[in-house]
Length: 125
Image 1 (cartoon, helix red, strand yellow):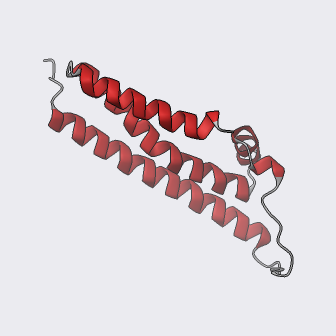
Image 2 (cartoon, rainbow, N blue to C red):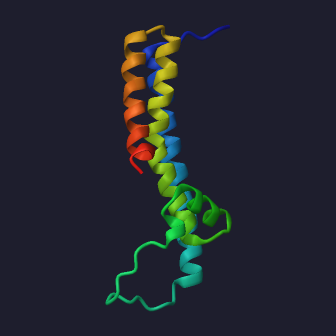
């Protein structure tokens, strides 16, 4: 039996997608925080000197490399990237949902929104 794509079904799937993205990113951040605290929790903080993020945590490639090297800060950053990717995945899925519903006008509007989101993240760098 083929299930029809209705507005309600798309909304339910989008809600589940958002919930899963937030829960996954929170779990990844907590894993990274646990690793970071286990390795660096006893170090004294130096508030006199500001040290920004290391250069390897300023790019997606560096974050992924650092996270897979099992460094706490890299895993935390990866969780934050997942959190940022969650609404982008929602917009991308909405395009698919509108295509299945044969709603071309909303498909075009949502594609423009996705293009603006992706440009703001990737194109402006």
